[in-house]
Image (cartoon, rainbow, N blue to C red; front, side):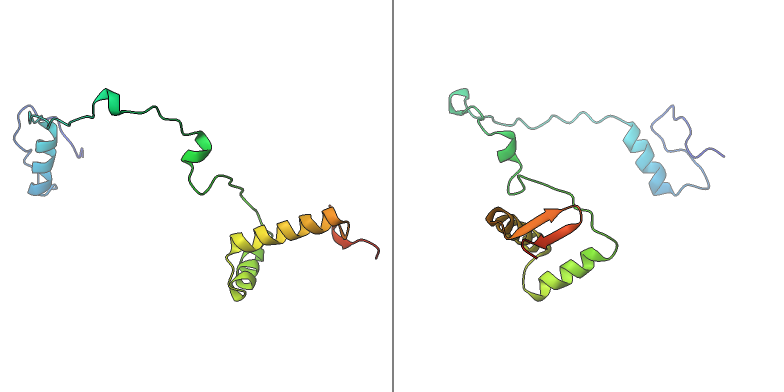
Length: 121
């Protein structure tokens, strides 16, 4: 059984399986309304300044985005740890990476595929 049928007039289709208000909506959606649109005032062309924003400025505070994939259950573990120390997950990860980078540059840590090791052990 077809749900919709072609309507040659603007009267709703008499059908037993469609509620009358729904039939009225269908009939009203198929008709065109000739309402005059409100005129929107635009500023004078001399007041408009050229847009100089770059793509990075348009992103707002999220200029750099990285998707991190943790091992199963690690996200909850990290989030609980950082929350206990009143730091968000993003802030905690960023602080940890900055700390590791600083220690590697100072020669106190070594980062490899096997993990992080103290230098001299």
